[in-house]
Image 1: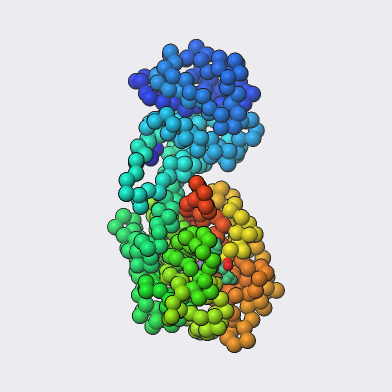
Image 2: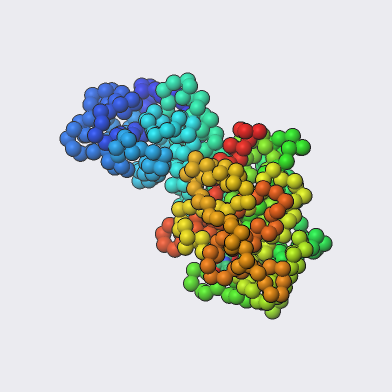
Length: 496
Ligand code: BES
Ligand code: MN
Ligand code: ZN
């Protein structure tokens, strides 16, 4: 998809398609009104006849209207003006893509930016349009032997003034960068476990160096052994694929500035290990590396935007399979931090690979650490698919992330990380157990991680419910929480 921006011209060379937005029950305004005038009232005629009410996502197509340079004119309904917020605006953008596809249009002048969306300037509007249109365009057909490739689409944003042009260009730049990050995260996540294994992720991380100002380092198992990362390595024991610790560094600021560190769970397939998962929907556990995918996406967005900030991405990656060598319930391992862990359930493996990565990142003297993980089924029960779970040892950091989630429409919800829950992790035989019983599973998982994050300001995002859509026709990765993380990094870089 290609996006350009220009000042609108109502007359001139013939063009194939134009999209205008119309508010329900309101006089035509702005560009829609001008188009209507030029076409001697073709639009208003349809509205006045009751043929088009401009309800939310309603649309009409007019062909070869005399007076207009466009062959097709698509009018999309916004619904009521006072109800048009960013969320609805994004839905409208999705409808536009659907419509363009139906009509086999490969290029369109989009005139939606001039319209008033509650509390948004042109920058915000342009960015959300791009993200929403990109989402609607996305297909994953890398694994199909033949696929009819959707034709590339060129969207030209039309604005009225120089100031709008400037703002729109900023929004387009941001939107494109975030969309590239989202698409990369989706692509990695949608790949099957037999392709996307820890070594594959490591290679993708190395590949980023060719295109972006990112430096990659990959630790192999013997290097991790020397560091004492036995919790992480224990998870990989049941698999023939070696574990990897992937480290990517983006330097956008002075070397002395401490980095924001993103740690992503990169479990490329989670069968549960000896505590085997049930068969139904087990295929979806290829998505257990969506935390890692988010880290890839956020780094790419930061690098594309050349944000003046340092960001490190650290990805512990492994498979979790049952095998004669696999962890057994009751096994005790020693983490890199020195703490011993009783593995009461081998399916609570995410925290085992994350805890060693969280100890490893101490060496970066981080400004903040955010880990992202498809960590608990309990989070899907608690928050469903709309909000990611957020827990933190620093309220300011939590607030920053919550705000970034609101702005990017990739929202998170704060859960308590109270001391009261910590005793659920008591073990009779080791320093800590890897499960905390049936209640408050998302919180006790975060409590476990919190034992390894005392040295820095830290937040944890549980994306088990938000990272992919389950079952059905919509099944697939969502690219969350790339928008949230990108916004967080943008906001941080503007402050520093
Ligand atoms: N990757 C899963 C969490 C998960 C499950 C995410 C289903 C999305 C959908 C994680 O490794 C896991 O298995 N967690 C266990 C923890 C339990 C054993 C304490 C869970 O949630 O059941
Ligand atoms: Mn598991
Ligand atoms: Zn898992």
